[in-house]
Structure formats: C-alpha cells, structure tokens
Length: 256
Image 1 (cartoon, rainbow, N blue to C red):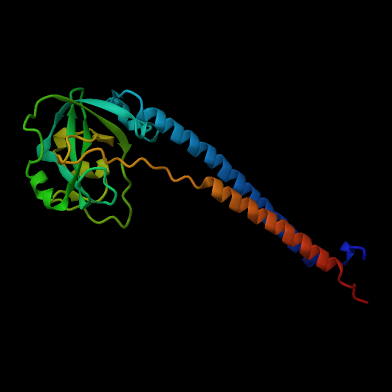
Image 2: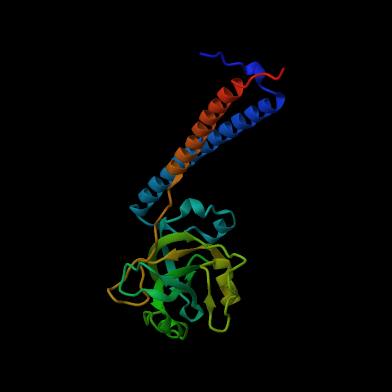
C-alpha cells in the first residue's frame, strides 16, 4: 500500500481544501439553524393550539394598539362589545379553494368595521360571499337587521401585507385585495378612527348563511426538519468528496 504523501499538495490545493471545509461548516451551520427554526415552529404550533381551545379574552384596548405585538396574539379568541357599521363595509377579493361551508370559488371577504363601546374600531371579517353577492353586501344587505349593541367573538388575525404587485384598491366599488386594516381604513368614515392593526375572523354561523364564516385557515408550513437533513447531507457529501480528492492528489507523483 502506497503511503499518502500530503507533501505533494500545492498551495492552490490547500486553498481548495480550506474552501471545501468552509463549505461543509456553512452547511452544518445552516442545518443547525433549521433545527432551531424547527423548535420555534413546533413551539408556535403548540401555542396556537392552546389558544384555539381557550376562552375568548377581551379584545385589546385602543390605547394598546400602537405598541401591540399582533403576531403574538395570532389566532387568539377575542370578544368585542359594540356595534357594526354596516354602511362602511368593504370587501376583499379572494378565491376560496377549500371551503368549509357550502360556498367557494371566486368571491369576497366581507370586512365590516366594528365600533367598540370602549373606543376605536376593529375590522371584522364576517365571512365569505360568492362574487355575485358583492354588490348586495356593499348596499347593506346580508346582515342582521338589528344595528344595536352586540357582543361577538372571533379569532384575532394580523393584517395581510400589501406588496408591490397588489392591485390598486377600487374605492368606488369598495374592493380591496388584501385584508390590511390600514388600507381598509382609507375607505371608511374618518370619524371611526383609530382603527386596530388587526382584524377578527368570525366563526361559522347558520348552515348556508351568508356571509359564510368559519373559513379561517390555520396552517403552518413546517419543512424545517427536511431542510436540516438536506444541509447536513450536503456537509457529509462535501467532506467525503474532499477526502477522496485529497487521496487522489496525494498519490500524484512529485515533479522532478
């Protein structure tokens, strides 16, 4: 068996060795980071599961909204006391691909301001309506005739971000494209401010009733374990390939 002669390696070979070791170390770092993210995601899922089964808490008061950590309250059941401003309803276009109720396909979320007794306004997502019902909603239909004080409960949700590809809001038809309370606030009576930086999803109502509540999607993509295995696999492959390459280079006959 020939003796491995590392002395045969040139300085450029050592540079390659350092680069490959750095690549393997980076892959290990990324795999470990994904494992940490896995722990965080599992903790988040457990926290949300606990919230969903908890009794509703009072909706955060308006004076807490500027500094409120909305993400920490995502999917928290809350109760609201006040009244709906049905004449200020806006709609948000959507396509309900996997409905829990009877209706699905292209349509709109019905976003109605809810004026709190304690002050401030929260947009309440009353549910989904098919696209042919959008005008009826805007004209004041599809709601309880009573406009007095009510207490409602639902799930608190952070507003959806507006991206550079988001279409312009249709102010005349009161149509938006994301459930962003800041954006929706531009379409209501200024007297209703302040507006909460979150909205509330209502639960399902009577069968076949419109708007169709209870369509909250509770899903957390959790592919971190697979990503971690992939990065660790890359690290192992890099080390094995480096070892094989070093063995081949060490067999090279020195130049005379």
